[in-house]
View 1 (cartoon, rainbow, N blue to C red):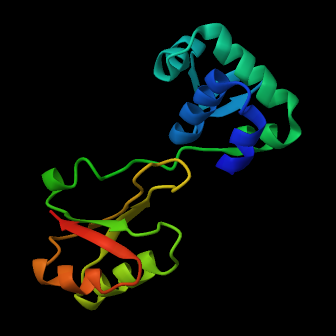
View 2: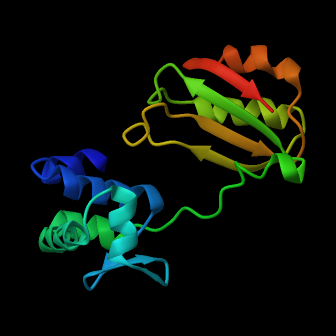
Amino acid sequence: MWKKISDRLREYPERLAVARILVENGLNIKNGKIWCSDILISAIRIARAAKVDRRTVTQAIRMIEDDRELREIFTAIRPAGSSLREIARHLNFGVVEITPTDARTPGILASSASLIAERNISIRQAIVDDPELSPEPKLTIIAEKKIPGDLIPEFLKIKGVAKVSIY
């Protein structure tokens, strides 16, 4: 998806910055406006986040709506929901953060989830950073209770795992 967006906006780096903010936050475009679900987001707020002026946001919206493929992406995109990543400690949840050698290696999430399930620990949430959007993508798994530290060597045996942190 990101390749398609960046190819179309390549000649307009500021508009591409606007598109990145929209994608990273799951914001969509309807009738020339930016929305987060049913909440209208002002162009000025997006401009500040993208470090561009309001007119650039308006131009980016117009360009997206005029392109059939971009319009399909940006009218359908939605926020992924609440992330427990930052509040897991306060909720006494366990967190394991896995850095892959290559984020496109299949099976990292499945194998990691299996290791946790074998310990009879329920997973509350799994967050996988998109390797096209994140310079250092990670897999973060939030579990109902602390993850035992003795699982670190087991996570490191998973094909494609470079680093593991448990907190």
